[in-house]
Structure formats: C-alpha cells, structure tokens
Length: 351
Image (cartoon, rainbow, N blue to C red; front, top):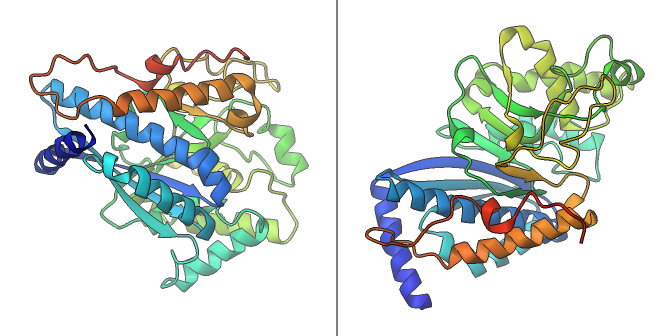
C-alpha cells in the first residue's frame, strides 16, 4: 500500500509541476521542543489542508496546488525538523517543497541587516527568533513576491486560498485585529509613546501576516523601525510585544499611505475571539463559522483543555487526509473541504 501511494504521489508531482499554482508560506521556529509541540503540528495541518485544496482544484478542472514552505530554524529546531522531514517529507513531496534557512546564517553576507537584526535580538535575548518575521521580505528569494507568514502556534483548518491573493498596491502587508485591550491610548502613554502607537481600532496581531515583499523592500519598511528601536534602546519607550509593537508603530505612522489592511476574522482565530474588547467595549469579531487558522496564543494548545482537545483532533484529521488518494481523476471518493469539518475544530468545550 505504501509503495502504491508513493507511485501515486510521484505521478501527481509530475503533473503538479506541469500545470500548477505555487503559493508561499513562511514559518519561524527556534528550539527543538518548540518545534515538536507547535511548528511540527502546524506544518502537518498546513500540508493536509493543502492536499485537500489540491484535490478539490483537480476535481474542478483547476491547476495543481503547490506550496513552497520557507522555514527559519535554529540548531535545536533544525534537528527536530530534519527528523520530521525524514519521516513525512516524502509523502508530502508531490505538492510541498521545503526551503530551510538557518537563523544565524540568514544575513551573513549582509552586514547592515545583520547589525540591525542583532539589535532586535538584544531587546529580547531569550528569544532570538522573535523578530525574524519582520525581516522575512529580506530573507526570502527576490522572486517570492507574495508570502503568508504564520506563527508556529497555529493549526491550519480551512482553505487559505483567499490569503494567497496578491495584495493590491500600495499595500505592504495585511494582518488581523489584535482584539484585546492590550493596545489602547493608556498603553501608548504609559509606555512612553507620544500619540497613538497602534494601528486601527485595536492594534494588529502579527500571528498571521500576508506580505508583498517587493513593496516592503522598495518602501524601506525596515528603515522605518530605526526610530522605534533607538527610542527603546534609549529607554524612552518600552516594548511589550516585540516585533508586534514595531509593526503597529510603522503601520499607524503610514496609515495615510495605505500600507496596511485588516485580514478577515477567520484567518486568525484566537481564544478570546468572541469576547468584548474591554477598553471601548465593542465586539470586532464574532467566532467565525468557517475558520481558516486557529492561533493558540499564550500556550493555548497546551494549557487550555478545550484547545488542547481540538489540536489532537486536528492531528487525527491529518492522518485521515493522508489516507486519501492523490489521483482523483475518475475517482468517486468524496473529498472533505477542510480539516475543520473533519475535526469539529470549533468545539472548544473542556474535556
């Protein structure tokens, strides 16, 4: 059976390269344990949902769906990642290409970027990967114009097709509302900012970011971080949420330039999604009925029983997707649309 699946997959791989639509996704993972408990499970869900999207596209006469996964790793995570790819990489190879970047090698030939990145690391030396997402447009190959960055503490449970639609000019990036009371006028003033320091109504959450990397580079977005960084280093402002703070600062400063747009609520579903924002008491997002990405912030997949149960069911659903045939031509197999429907992914009842 395994040999038949491999032969089936090889045929699919050949067809995928002949008529395919390539999507780009980026991850950052540091620490072997973190990779095993978060990034590995997120990657598995991404691969499985990509297979479902691919099979449905073929059934509807569309192109093969191919995903290039770009992942930045440190030494410990690289060991865990390599073991996982040796175990599962061949199975997903028909539609998934993996590209790895070592976190301490990404700017070895670009001293100015390396110096800037090291200054960000010095702000939080316990998390050397924490700010890499801000640098991704300078890490990836120039031909990667549109990419979706996803935090590792996520599970992909719905089709990401809409997330891969190119951002129209002049947009640089798109993110979801932060949805909680962290970003508000009091936050800005108490942390040394003069004026508003966050974008939009509730700030941005950087757990899922759709980038146009070319505009990010052309507009010099990284240079925009310099004032913020200098103020933090001088102790004049305080950073609470790392790269997310500087992203909000840049986005707010360039609101009139149209650099930023807000992603729909289904692209970044978090535990407090259905709660009120306390500082002004609105509800920005209802819990969506068809989520795309579940974001287990603050260790929710480990520490919240309901979210932990969902994570387990999603991983079980991945195995069910692996059992589906790759070749659906003339096949009557009913293909599920999403991992969510296979896993009851919105059932967060504590167990």
